[in-house]
Length: 267
Ligand SMILES: Nc1ncnc2c1ncn2[C@@H]1O[C@H](COP(=O)(O)OP(=O)(O)OP(=O)(O)O)[C@@H](O)[C@H]1O
Ligand SMILES: [Mg+2]
Image (tube, rainbow, N blue to C red; front, side):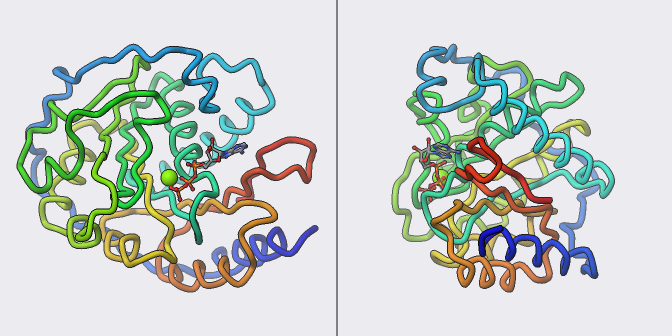
C-alpha cells in the first residue's frame, strides 16, 4: 500500500473515533423554486463519453465503481439525515468535477432520488463543460443579480438531475459570494422543497483560497478526492486538519491502478 492510501486509511480511522455536530438550522417553510420550468438540454452521448461521463458507458467496471460510491454516500447521507455534500480536494485537477458529475448521475439513476449539482467552483467552473453545454446564466447571476433559479437550472437530458452551472472565471469575491446570505437561502431552497433530493456542490480545492472553509457552514458533509501518485500525504494531512470539525464521508482515491482499474474508493 502506498503512502497516500495509508494516509487515507489513517484519516478514516480518526474520523470513526469522534465527531462534532454542526449543521445549518432549517427554516420554517420552503421557499418558491420553479423546478418544473427547468430548461432541458439534450446532450450528445459522444460528448459525455469523451468527457468520461458514465451515461451510456460500456465500461462496466467504471460504472460499478461509481454505483458503489453512490450507494455508500446515500447510506451515510440517509443515516444522518444529511442533504448537502461538498466535493473538494487538497489541490487542483485531481478529478473533483468528474467525481461530482458521475456521482450525481449515479444518484439520478436510482429512481427514488433526485439530485442537484451546483457548480460552486467560482474560480474554475467546469460542470456544464462536462456536458458540452454553454450556460447562459450561472450561480453568480442568482447571487449577484437576483436572476430567478428557473432561468439558471439546466437538465442535461437525465431524469431527476439538474445542474446549477457557473461561468464566471476567476471571481475575485468567490468566498464572499459562497458565504453570503443569498447562498444560504439558495441551499435552503434546494434542500427543503423535495425531501428525496440530494444536493451536491462541486467545490474548489481546499488548499487554494478560503472558499471551501467559508462555505462549510452550509454543508452537511464532505467528500474528498485525491489523485493517486499526485496528491501528497502532507497536502492530504493538511486537508484533514482543516476539516477536523466537519463530517467527512470518505475519500475517493482517483486515477488509481492499485486494484487494476482507474477508480477506487476508501470509506
Ligand atoms: N479517474 C480518471 N481517469 C481518467 N481521467 C480522469 C479521471 N478523473 C478525472 N480525469 C480527467 O482529469 C481532468 C481533470 O478532472 P476534473 O476537471 O474532474 O478535476 P478537478 O479536480 O475538478 O479540477 P479543478 O481543480 O480544475 O476543478 C479531466 O480531463 C478529467 O476528465
Ligand atoms: Mg473542477
